[in-house]
Image 1 (cartoon, rainbow, N blue to C red):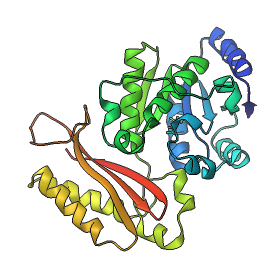
Image 2 (cartoon, rainbow, N blue to C red):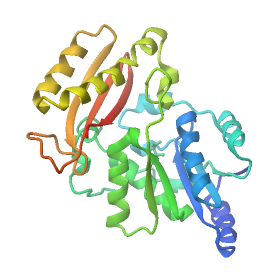
Image 3 (cartoon, rainbow, N blue to C red):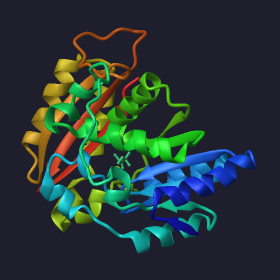
Amino acid sequence: MKIFSEKTQIQNAIKQIKTRDLSVGFVPTMGALHEGHLFLVKEALKDNQVVVVSIFVNPTQFDNKEDLKKYPRTLEKDVELLESVSKDILVYAPTVNDIYDGQAVAEEFNFDGLEFEMEGKFRTGHFDGVGTIVKRLLEIITPDNAYFGKKDYQQLMIIKKLVEKRQIPVKIIGCDIYREANGLAMSSRNVRLKEDYKEAAPFIYKTLKTAKEKFGTRSAKEVTKWVENEFAKHQFLTLEYFIIADAENLKSVKRKYKNKTYRAFVAVYADEIRLIDNIALN
Ligand code: PAF
């Protein structure tokens, strides 16, 4: 396994790869890897001759400094996990300085309003930070394909928008949400859940599945009310938002139309750990 900490090194390695006309797949991560990340890596390995994984906890996408401080950093274990999938993966694990040249500030983006929905309302500046780092990483790695999980569905739509608006020559591939056996969406934050909260957390997906059933016969407003009531009764989980939205423009739904696709999105606090999840409704 080759690990690069400087962009010039990985860029040289990629230049060599490109002269051999090999396709490059890219999986950007913030480390603390789990089966969900490995699923993205396996998808990338299926489609590409070379796979690059970046491991970088990006400071500019954290609106909460405490969350940034506590974000798990487990490079050695991450590398072992990647090695268990393939020894040929290239890992780019830069320092903040290598990425930001001493100026860790986010660029401002216009994502045609996608950035103001859901997560954008609760995490100020988050998507500017995500846009900044993903743009930089795509410029450094220049992959043919880049892989993102649908757990961060809004992020996925924003990255598709970024690539379209900035004309970055890469195909963005959204991969299905990878879940624990109990239904909890895999997340690097799950390891921080205390026992009671870990036991409670599968309630999130269970509620999403029931909301999906109800959406077949009831209005978005009725389903939303039902979900809010379910969480209000819950001892361990605090609902931040539940929204049924158009899957394309992420605007919350007032009326259902036959030719539209919808998704339900949820953000929940389990103690101080914030968990998000979503489900396709039709
Ligand atoms: O989804 C993540 O882990 C991060 O937001 C990403 C895309 C790696 C950018 O830092």
